[in-house]
Length: 87
Ligand SMILES: [Zn+2]
Figure 1 (cartoon, rainbow, N blue to C red):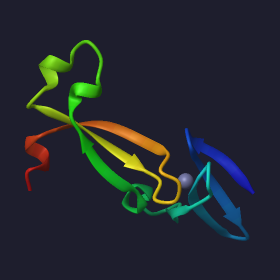
Figure 2 (figure 1 turned 90 degrees about the horizontal axis):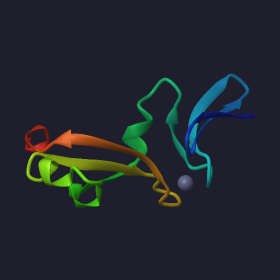
Figure 3 (figure 1 turned 180 degrees about the horizontal axis):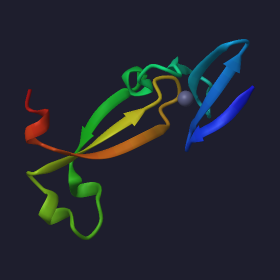
Figure 4 (figure 1 turned 120 degrees about the vertical axis):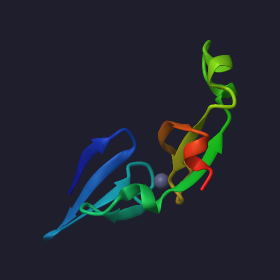
């Protein structure tokens, strides 16, 4: 059984086991009590892709995009400070 979790993600229940899966290809990203983001492909994208305020973001922020490793669908995009990713 699958329940919608968020856009492009479902919670898959099989017996007593629950896992987070891609809603498109059903790739398992991890158990429901784990961080599903750890199972994603990640890329940092310039704020050039953003809307009208992108000039204010340049050099200070990047978009951290998380994709399904199975089918490549975008699962999450978060704005992150560049300095926070320097480690
Ligand atoms: Zn997928």
